[in-house]
Every structure is written in C-alpha cells, then in structure tokens.
Image (tube, helix red, strand yellow):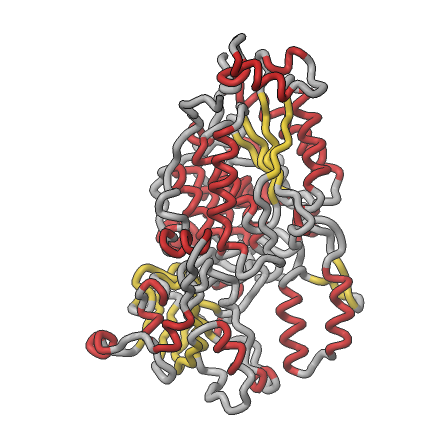
Length: 570
C-alpha cells in the first residue's frame, strides 16, 4: 500500500530531503518508510477546562500508534471552551472545523485520532474529518465525576440554572449559592449531565466514529487511557484498510445516531451538529428525519436534565451499548463503525446493571421521547422542542407573547416588577440566531421573571431563534428557522400577540392573519439588535452562515475536498 505521506517523504530530491530532515529529530531512520503517520488532533487547552486533561489521553494514543507500527504526531487544533468564550463558542465551530480540515490536508499524515470533549470540539473535528476524508477515529475525553453540596449530588450546568433561579426566587441565599461553586466541578472532564458534551460523545459512538464501548467513560477513569491506547493502535489499522469516513458513514449511521439521541434524552444541540456533519459527507439528512426516526423511540436513560442521575451512574449502569441493546430492533443493522464491524455486533453482551439509571425498554422514562420538530407560521422552516425536559402541562398551550428584541433588552426588563407578564405568557427572545447574534448562543432557556419565581412558577413556554445548553431544561421552543435576522416571522411578533404551542400536533403558531403579518415590518430595536460586524471571522460568518434547520454551517464549507494537495511547498 502506498501511503499518502510518501508524497512528502519518498524520493531523493531536494523537497523530499527537506521534508525528512526537518522531521528527523530523534526518530528512527525507518520512520519515513512504510510507517503510517498518525496525527493526534488535540483540543487540550487550559481555556477549555473540560479538555485540559487531553494531553494525558494523547500520550496513551501515542503509545498505541507506536505499538502498531505507526508514527504518532501531535497536532494541536483550535479548542473551543463552551463556558469561557464570548459571545458564544458556536460562532467558531465552523472556523475550528475549517482550520482542522486544512491542517489535516496540508500535512504529511495518513490518518488521525480526534481528541475532543467540550461541546463544540467533537462536532468540529468530525466536520473536518468528513471533509478531508482521511482515516479518522474519535476518543471522547469523558465526563467529570459527581460532586456534592450539602449532601446532595450536583449536576454540572443543570444545577447552575436551578440554583441561580432559587437565589432569584429568594429560597436560596447568595452565600450558599457561592459556596456551591467550589463543589460543582469535582474533577477533570466535561459536564456530568446528559448535556451537549455527553450527548455528542455518545452520539459519535452511535454514529460509528468511536470504538464501541468507549464513550461515557469518566475522564479520571484509567479505562479511558486504555481505550485511548487501543484507539491509537486501531488508527494504524484503519490506514492499512483505507477505512475513511466516506467508506463507513452512511444514512444508516445517522439513523442510528438519531435513535441513540432519542433514547438518551440527549441535547437539542446534537441536531444542528449532526446536520452539519452529514452536510460535509453529502448525506441527505434533513430536520424532519429527527422527528420521523426519533419520535417513536422511548427515552430509557434517567439522567439530568430530563431525569435524576448523572454520567458516572450511566457508565456504572452499562453505558450506551446497554441502551442500544434495549432498542436494537430500531437500529439499522447495516451501519458500520471505525472497527469495520457493524454497531449491532457489539450489543449482545451489553447488559443493564442498574435498571433505575437505564430503564428496560418495557419501562421507559418517557414512552415516546426524542426531539420534536415543530412547524407553523412562526417557524416555517422548523423549530425544536425537547419534550422530555419540558413540563407536560405546557406541551399544549396558548398564551400572550412578551417580546424581547435582544438579549440586552431581556436582561434589562425581565425582572422589572411592572413587566406585564403572568404564568400563561409566552416569553419570546429574538435576534439570537446564527446571523443575528452572531453564532446562535445558548440563551433560549431564558430565566423566568423574578416576580413569577417568587409566586412559585418554575416553567413557562419560551420561544427563541437561539439554542440552549444541553444541561438546561424547561418548555423551550428553540432553533426557530428562519431566524429573525434572516427575515423569519419571529421578527414580526409583537407583545400581546397570541402564540399557540401544540407539541403533539407538531405546531407552533402565531394567531395573526397573513394580511396583518404582511403589513408589519421589524421594529427599530429589533434591527439594531442584529449583529453587524465590520471585519474578520464574524463578518465572514454572518455573510455565509446557513440557518439552523440545515446545520448552521458556512455555505462554502458544505461538502468535502478530499485529502489531495496538488502542489509542492518549495
């Protein structure tokens, strides 16, 4: 087999000399002949605290690559820290994917191991790998261990939202809230809820891009390092087999990913990421597939924010494979994995060890879970809601809109005691889509008005063109498309308009006539709230980003360019 890296290293001319000489820093002479060059695309960063431990994981990957006869090569790539980056990490997901793709293509490598954890890191790496189409395999960094406060388990993220609302309601002191901060993050690793990080790690395994049985292993667990070693070994074999994303990722793979997403009660953010990854592969995945496939899948995992337990419990109870074994009849048996074997081949011995954490299929947490796709005159191109995280009594609701033109407008007025709002109102926040913010931030799970919290209200219907954290909960309609900044009807809603939500009927409607909507125009405050960057990535992003219903990728990044590089560097 002729290795791709031989295009750099083979031969005796000046260019080959340069390529070898600059890499000959302690490696053996045979490093450049017949040995696969395996990049370790590493998103470790102190500013991405959930991924800070990935250098240790990378060391185990290196050992596995060496053991299998390959040459491991560290390749730091753009790292996106969800909790730190302003205005939102989602603004740079496509940039991180583009940068990683170009680095993989430009360098003399034959395959790659992708190290991610925090929300956007695994999606961006998979988008890159799909576009460059070199043998690629993911090692998820794993969730943190469970912290406790006042004798009670803390759910990373979810309890931030819950406890902060209790402070605003006056039922928890600011002192106690601050004391909980040091207990929230107990160890290395990403969020320990079924938030976006956990969801994307598990969905990546269901998709076939992770060695089965790896995702969900806690970050401090030594078995993660063992899996990383095995993944490095596998990466070398994948090069020998020419097992590239295009050879094993199919529509069937995405079918299984959607089934897993539903059974896990996973994050709505997975929808926009899976759509973007499919777009890089040229796979015809559409928003309605998530409802068509996922709506008949029972939610089996009793994890916060939809349930009670946390990721450490999930791993102990049997993990993803135990979940998939319960719903094996809903999986596509033809979908392959990075090992070359079908995903279903790994399910026979995957038993549930704790039936409270992972429910048997005949005793689901929610009989028909998944993520519901809503349409109507308020969201012609679709919107999402996660029924398992919503309040059942609000899944069919009519209420008067209370509209906020921007996140700044929201923060300025939400706790105004004179705000005309009650428990039946529908909170509407616009200007938070891909173009409008820019970057589609996690602001859709709006805090409730303080005066209603003090009355005991803990959920309301909320509608937004942005996203919400996978750790969040509530009756939230999000990813409204088209967004307000792209001419969507959300820009035309006025306070006092009646909004109707009927999740069973998959409808989100505005009780305003077509003629009246035609006469309306966005108000000045709405338009002034839209992003209008003058230069740099933000300008490029706003000019080219697509809408949430197709994955919010940049229009010129959809598809792939392969791994060929036609010109020499000298």
